Image 1: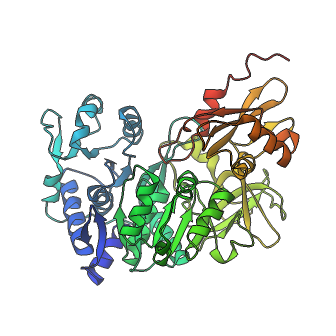
Image 2 (image 1 turned 135 degrees about the vertical axis):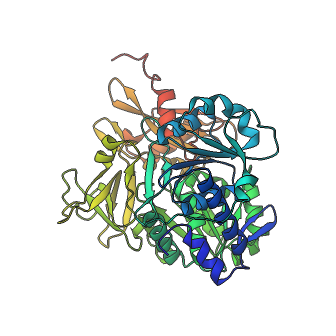
Image 3 (image 1 turned 90 degrees about the vertical axis):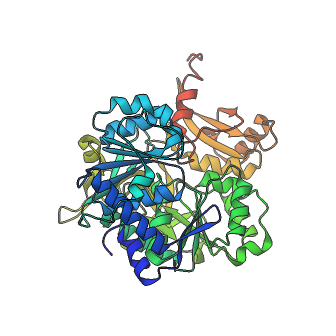
Amino acid sequence: MKLLHELILFTANRDPASPALRHRLKDITYAELAAQVSSVSGGLLECGVQRGDRVAIYLPKQPEAVIAYFATSMAGAVFVPINSQLKAAQVEHILDDCAAKILITTADRAQSLRAMCAKHNGLQTVVLDGDEDSSSLAGSLRWEELLAASANQRRSDESDLAALFYTSGSTGKPKGVMLSHCNLVTGAESVSQYLQNDAGDRLLTVLPFSFDYGFSQLSTAFLVGACVVLFEYLLPRDVVRAVKNERITGLACVPTVWLQLSRQQWPVDITNHLRYITNSGGSLPQTALGALRKKLPKTDVYLMYGLTEAFRSTYLDPTEIDRRPTSIGKAVPNAKVMIVHADGSPCGANEPGELVHSGPFVALGYWNDPENTAKRFRPAPGASTTEIAVWSGDTVRADEEGFLYFVGRSDDMIKTSGYRVSPTEIEEVLYDSGLVSVAAAVGIPHHELGQAIVVAAVSPSGSGDSKGVLDYCRSQMPNYMIPAHVDWRTQLPRTVNDKIDRQLLASELKDFFAGTTA
């Protein structure tokens, strides 16, 4: 299998009656999924979709979204998943940036999209799923019309562009990361190998499909013929309930979600079928990790590190978690990672440096953005060929045995009193205090320190104890790491991928010390 849509077709031929998707207590078999993907591919071709055209998909987590991704692949076009939580302005940026030819969305969003769609000359067709009247939206088709088309496909090559995943971005507006069929398929092969996925697995989709980590639940499952349970949740207890009721075997989340889930009551017998859980998208606080392991004693925990530009880079084997619970492990199968100084020379043991990733997962660059592509995608250090690597911008270190440890994002690092401080290190202490339920440390401009450390936090009791937090910090950290202020909030801002939005926090707090004088 070399093309993304072939993951579904292969299992449909081998085991057509096995469940591929489950949504609202209804199963869709691999044979049914393959047939619908083939029909929608034919419908897209009838709409005039050409090889490489962008098809934007702005749908909730429902079967139509999955069908649209893989049908776009089969039609030789490029699918662009748009997070269903985004509003018209953010959707407009993505449509503008990728020059989408077709937009697939729900009819109940049509009203808010009318003015936007009218402005986009390149947007030829809007496909609407739902019952609301959208007859006044020019160029619109019903989803059922695509589904009723004759099966058809266009030949593609594994090196062809398959998808654009828009990153939340640390600076500026989101950028479209270009991923090939090879990127997506080899990524699925690697992940399924170390997670030991098979056809008996049932994966719950907590994360959005516009997040590469979330989309991986689809590609990894379809590679081995497993079942994906489509799921939207409102409260953390909804996740626990779904894991139990659907007998989920694999669950992937980001740290902010795991923090919430670590405080939930998990049924004792849930660990009999929950074979593994995975974390990526940031460091998992040790308090949350300990709580999860206590509540899920038979469940393997995979601590991972990845970035959209290279999909997945490292994982920690669960057998190592007792000896090195803060490690992000070693390179995943088929990937090569290095830790280097700014000049590209290798770092020694326990010497922090930038993580550089090379191999078949490395994306094709940023869509329509040669300047940022040239900054992030550069020749691999010491490579004798023209092999391109992703320079992550993340600071990590490796111990004497080669296990890696995340230090911090280069653009999140706080420079205070001449020291470089990792927000993660501060946050670990805050969680250990038991006085915060969610916290994020950011650097704020300060006339004497360069940057002062401010912590935005949520109190588990609803009443923040600043003195208690700072006293605990003083007992655990050197003076230069102690926060100058704790900003208590009812919740912290999140990106569309449910990560804490540090950039927005820093912007909101940037003038906090403006009134002070030297």
